[in-house]
Amino acid sequence: MKNGKVYHNGFAQTDQIRREHKTKHHRDTQTYEYSTKSSKVMREFGTQVERKGIWIDKREDVEIQAKMYFSSEMWEARREAASLFIQRLVRGWFARKRTAALKKEREDKRKAELAMEEEFRKKEEIRHKKEIERRMHPRTKEDFATLYEELEVIWNLPISIA
Image (cartoon, rainbow, N blue to C red; front, side):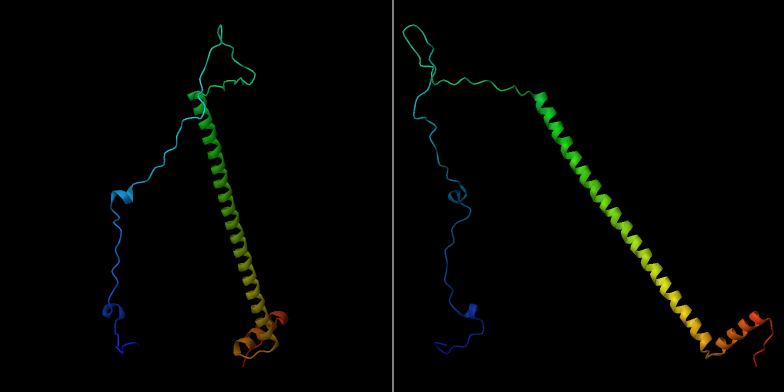
């Protein structure tokens, strides 16, 4: 628009701005900067045994009971119990899933059977209506033949079709 030039490919016909990319494969890029925290406490602690000439204040002391020892056998038993619990839940889930699939399959089968029965009943009904219509208003030679045959059966008289 500014200089009246017609561009056929704007990217190829214009000067591109060169951007400098940071080096990705460099130690400074790949190194995590750690922050250190001091583990030195503000007050020095230690143990001192009471002896002649040293009195130790025991009013704020707290007596701690040792926890029960957790042996490797106990850890193994706990792990075994946890794995059995997980197995029980997973097997129950699989069983519920399979039961639901079987129920769905049974329901689909029942619906298909009902649909087939309904279709058969409708076809029979249509066939029955057609038979009644053929007998009430015969049109073809076969319709009249059927009627004559039925009359022969009912009256036991031989009727010939001319």
